[in-house]
Image (cartoon, one colour):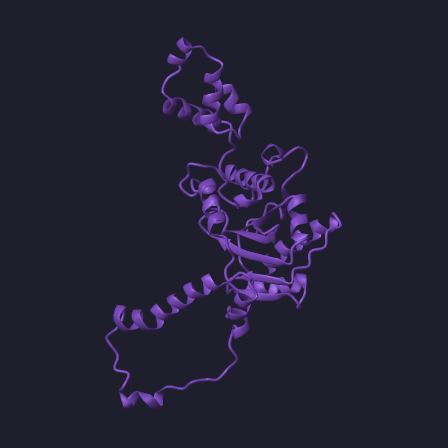
Length: 306
């Protein structure tokens, strides 16, 4: 089983244990030991063959850890060892085809799923065959506009290598300015950017808590808003809204039967199960990268799963 653990770095310890028992008779099975102890030994044996956990983004990904299925490398872009801005983008030919056949995209980022040396795991989902399919992932160390442009350009350039035209008409994002501007710069100003209703409700609640409850009750004395002495001290500046109503209002898209959110809850829960041990130190960054690669493969084989 130890040899199998080394050679098969993707099989689950429980699977290795079950496969080993299937070739033994009853007497030998009784001498193997308890399942929990054996699977722990398998994990420890496998951990000895994992490269040292990188402390920064200047690491090199060896070929054995590039999550190949057949001869295909799911890492379609790597900005290279860089202490300030490292970007790694994952996708496959099949996923790029799905993106090219869909005009409705969804994008979001997750901070808890990314390894400690990265800032976030950003992903792109599309509607394909009436399912929400995750087609591209990006590990990013920064969230400025240039970084998002680099991610979108990498996806677009790789698709063009396969003669795939990416032409989204509607993209649902959160309410950050940087990815919106980057999206228009790479895919054109005609792309309709819609705000995610779930993110809107979250942001609205946080703002309400900040401007009233926190300032009034949490960090300061109760303010009397009827104090006439303070009325003349308040000046309001009229200016265009940062996000116009057509960006966040979901009335029209609801009538048209389109999505109000990015529908990524179950996908993120699935990724959480794959990568939750990274921040606690029980799983290496390279194992997390491999998990992301396997998630793409699972997505290809069974579309409804994520």
